[in-house]
Image 1 (cartoon, helix red, strand yellow):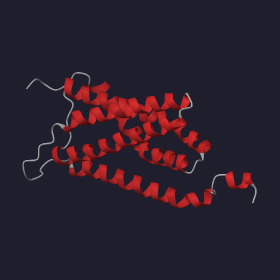
Image 2 (cartoon, rainbow, N blue to C red):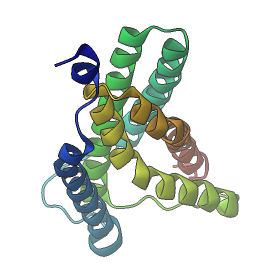
Image 3 (cartoon, rainbow, N blue to C red):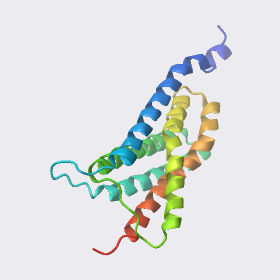
Length: 187
């Protein structure tokens, strides 16, 4: 067997199981979030569980993810592949922890309604944030998969779209937090 043949990436046929897994995980996550936010509408959990501190934690996790994503982009542009890998795993971990905290908060407390004067702007930011966030999990999983398979040509094709979307979603998550807090009446 020649060296060129052994250095090529594995066949795309074997990718099918991963794509099915990613599709199932993404569909289940979206269905659960849809149920939680649109049907169940949170709240009414027994006990004295108070998770009102989590929105600030979530904003911090989103800000952390945004900083790590931008630093990861800078690292790969400078050729620091190992640093890039660590930063991207950190961004994924921050976003995954955000998602866990987000679900916990909304399960216990439900939605926070915007009551400020900039409702139209808030709804535009929120809508773009929510719609684009739906693509982050499957695209991030695919990007990690291609990097793990060392198929960097396909990894770059995915991350060309993923990087700006994920960064935007992370930044607008922080913006939504501040808009909700700034639009709330004084206690």
